[in-house]
Length: 460
Picture (cartoon, rainbow, N blue to C red):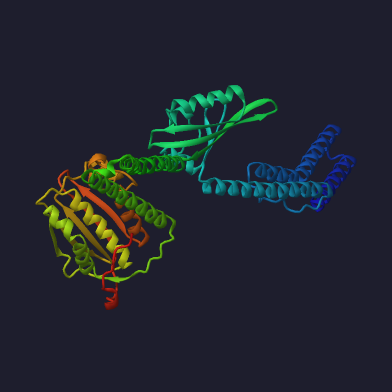
């Protein structure tokens, strides 16, 4: 640029010299000389300004591009010291801006990762109720499948308590923790922590953290129900045993016939109490995982035959026909022999209890892929559809009075479920109101171990 300025200055001097020389030779008059001089000065000034302003314009373009977000843009080196200093300042400003934007982008990525990984739902809204930020957990809790940023809170949820709490936070400007019950898209219990965003005494928004505590509340309810059920189940036989024992002590022993009857009743309820305690201990061991399971190859047909032999007297008394032909040739399964026998005992015993005299119970098996499914089908009273989802819960009975009369504790199916699940299998039930079918699916044994085919006695 300095070289260009020198050339322009040389041209101007030559032009002035030509004008003066021409005027001295009287080639043109004074007016023309003045006009030519002014023109030359103006042109030279314009040319010098253009040459001087070109680097400045380039710097202005660079600054404009940086301001529009092209942070990687850098100005070229300049020969003019003043322009060079300006280029250096712009270069440093762009470098600092780029580093700051990189830090902000890294913080944003980290925040997005944290929000995506959180199991709790996060929502940020402005004082007008417009949502500015949510995470995937929030969308899942409220059943949302589209972007909600920019939408009003009332548009994504019609829950009255949610909006009332939001308005209360705007009014009180205080943190608040409460429980909310959502009924859509499913029944959910939420623990919500509301936090107002206040900057310089001005409320700029509200943050809400949603904790799904449905499982916790469900477990608390199950624990309360369990305690109540155990207390009820234990109270009945204990009360009867205590009552008849007091009767015997007050003189009933002097009447042999009544005494024998009372002792028989006491013995019956003592057996029921012992059975209940035994089932509770078994269930507790299964749930704690303290029961050792020795998975080996087990022949289903032989195990079922042994169970039928154990229950032969009850089968004969009830007049029930048990058919095992569907298990002939069934593949071996990988299971603990004693626990598998316990599963079949509980299922077959239930089928016998709730099948009318003259009915039948059929056991069969099917093989699909690497799984073997054992089905126990009866022609009994069936299970109502409303009770099917809860049939494997502890102490759950379809007909409590009839179950107690039959001597059931309400724990057999729960024990079956835990045993099967501990061995990597699944259990399910089907019933159309007339008869029921229970399905137990276990892994198929790859090879048959003849030493493992011998059935064992069911464990308590």
